[in-house]
Length: 394
Image 1 (cartoon, rainbow, N blue to C red):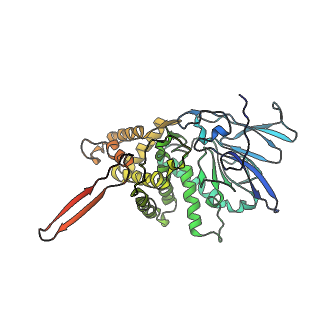
Image 2 (tube, rainbow, N blue to C red):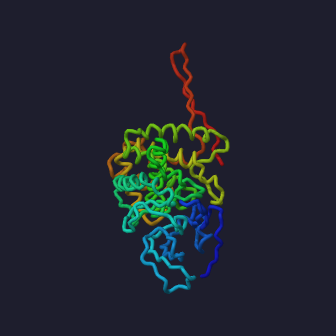
Image 3 (cartoon, one colour):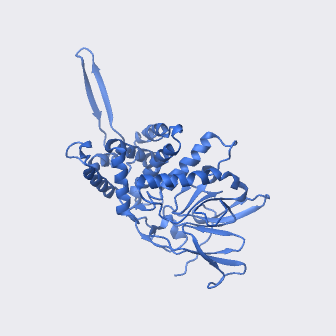
């Protein structure tokens, strides 16, 4: 099937952007941003998260540029294709089964840190900014090691590239094996950047690399269940950073950022539940950050506290192993977590005759949050407790 697409400067699909090089000139690059349904702008496909395929990618490029994709390059050739003069073809290793929105490739004159092509973990940026990639190159492998320890599952792909894109609409994007970032979320300069900048880099790297398990290895069945991606990634960015940098006390910051802040949005009449019927993935509110990310990660933290960290982490490992290279919805997730609770002998951590799904679906399927009012009667020496209930139908 032949397909022709136009490279545009719209920061979506396979697009082009420019930046100033080290001599003050203008350089151009092309890079992808496919989430949610923009892979179809680059190649014909069934562009839905639950539908997965193995991808074999070949990219023609000028000889003075480089390419990147999800997998390592197998070979570079000038044969077997109708190439323009001065072009070569990079042929990539076939990917495992993955969703279309996670496919990625880039063509640029970027530099790598470390520069060795045989290194499994590298950070890429425009040459002028390569000195600011050392921190992310140092901390990235640590994040992968922590996620491996938590999930008991090795990182799946043979390499990882982090790419700092000069013009990028999102903060970062978790493409499997080739994560793209806005420059401010990946670059850090010692003695120049602030401590908050440093925390921003490691937490965003932790967020995106945790997606390599939660989102990439197991993807949401549909965008209605995006919290299984983003809620977990938001949760891991604090947990993983806290394990790497315990002195920063990230889990205390979590309460302010992801519990207190979503209360504001969740109290509004227009708020949506964490899970709701997404009809058009092009409508941006399907990924409302306060609800999907903040409230989603808060109920995940609640699960950990109720079920205990040991049982919860074992349940997550079981979930990933049972659904790897496939997709899931929240019922599947709750059922697998319940299996682990039952097999662990800790089922008494939940009220009698209730399940994981019974409890936490009330948080994901309803808008808002419970409001409990306590009125003290000093004359009678007693208190009256009421819970306000509001209609939650969409």
